[in-house]
Image 1 (cartoon, rainbow, N blue to C red):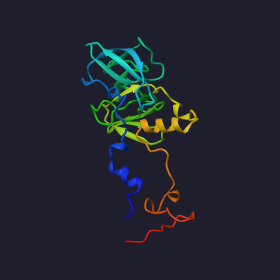
Image 2: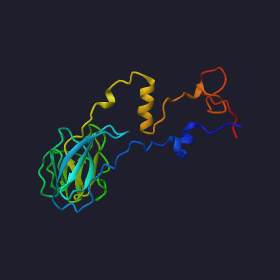
Image 3: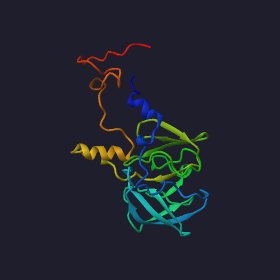
Image 4: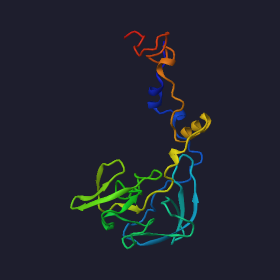
Length: 217
């Protein structure tokens, strides 16, 4: 009797295939308050989180609470971040996309109102405010696609830091394994023809073609 292929076991979602929670700091989301309220926060530290390429900005709000946000290019310790409808169009500030003019670069955008920012959060990524309409605000994503969102959703001005980290060559297999492991990805990937017949339909025998050798049920 054979065994289930690796892709099926990964699809089931066992703990051995999930990203480790070790080294995680905090969800990188906006503080939970009314988007209309004006707040000012100060960046007190820039930290690295395991499995995340973009650096996190540790901020202290005016009420003394601590939160973590993805850092944009140009962030530094001691700089201020403004929240609310009255915040200026300056890199790092957070505002509703209805108040952000066309052509502005944004990141960490809310897909649903109040979710704290759920996409455009990878290192070096950004979107462009394309147009404002009655049905919402349209963003042009880095992939070239367009997304129309609720005009009250919040976004951060600027481009996220850490761009180009994936272009650095991984000189050793162990380094690549640890990088993939931190993200919950499988490495190395073994070809089906290099496996046994009980493991993969392409496995077994000396022939290197891709015709399954196992009988049909």
